[in-house]
Amino acid sequence: MYHTYNQQSPPESSSLLPTTIHHCHNITFTSTPSINSFPVKPSPEPKSHWLSPILPIFKDTPLFYQHLIGPTPPSLDACKDLPDEIEQKTLLACSYGSHDPSQGLSSHGWIFSSNILLSIVSGVGPVDGHPSLLSSYQAELSGILAVLYIILRVCFYYHIQQELVQCYCDNMGAVCNSYRRPIPGILPFLASDYDILHLIHNLLQLTPVQVVGSWVKGHYTGPSPEIQHDLNAEADDLATNYQHYQPHS
Image (cartoon, rainbow, N blue to C red; front, top):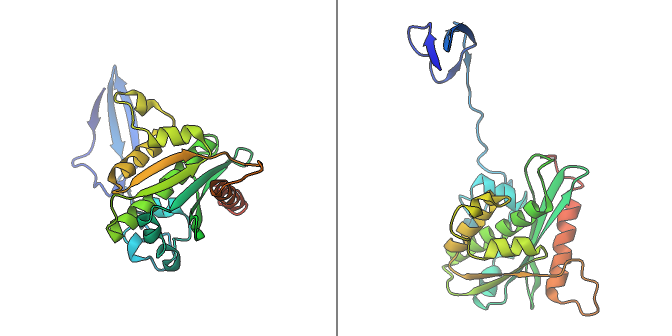
């Protein structure tokens, strides 16, 4: 396709010009930009989604991860116990993804705990996307990503290495696809929600401690519930309740 422009000099990149396109013959076109332009003023990007002061641990957290972790960042009192639990190999994490197809809303809840301190810190965040394309699987992956980012920042800040963190999720597919090594080739790029999986795999490679993903039975009603079942139930409540006041994507 060939174009000819009826203008002496190209317009400035910061302006939008209404243009009339004329079809001359075959595949030749001419365009006549208007002399009246609409200046393009980029909207200022917010410096932070978090209203409360950001801890040094999470300084310079990208807006994407701020949005993912949720409207309330982990507090200082909550974070001070995380490094000790990691070094003692007693830190547990659990995430849960919730999806309401009738409203086109998805959210995820996450919680950190230990056998001694029980609940240490928890939070909830939205899952963005077109309402018809959201899924519970995408919400589960978003919760796993939020947990891994918090672990990464805590380990970097406190220079923690060669320890172990146990992470639970009740979606077997999300656990397997997140924590197993990606298969070489083009097939991983065709997987559902590969963009989130790609970030998860990158964080796992960057994290200096070993993060083990495990499946937990969701909505456990058996006679002998364990701590991971309690964490799953709490993360479920966080994610489900958040949808009552969550803005639409």
